[in-house]
Length: 112
Image (cartoon, rainbow, N blue to C red; front, side, top):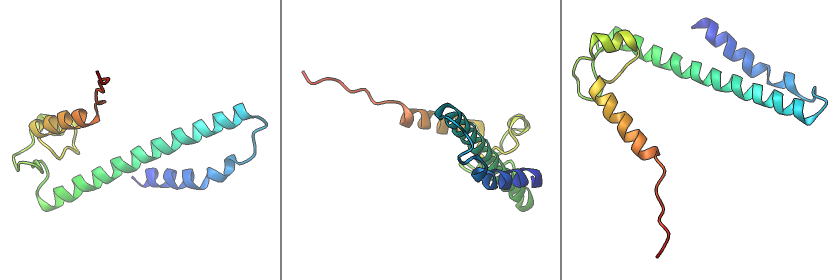
């Protein structure tokens, strides 16, 4: 985890390293694209670190493996596949369906 934090700090301090070094727009676009990719990777790492910290706190307080939605035990199979899981498979499936419903584009019909 310390290694991830060190790399995240490097990313933030390295932002200024890209300024005005490129001779043309294509190079600038490529540098910007690379920078955005690094930021997305660092954001994902940061999110994962928060989830790991949350799982460790749950281990400490004795609630690891308990679904935060229904209070039932999360299956060992699910925890082996995803140790940071906070929901049992039933509630995770329900949450996934709800999210996909909310994210789906709304159909717009022309006026007749």
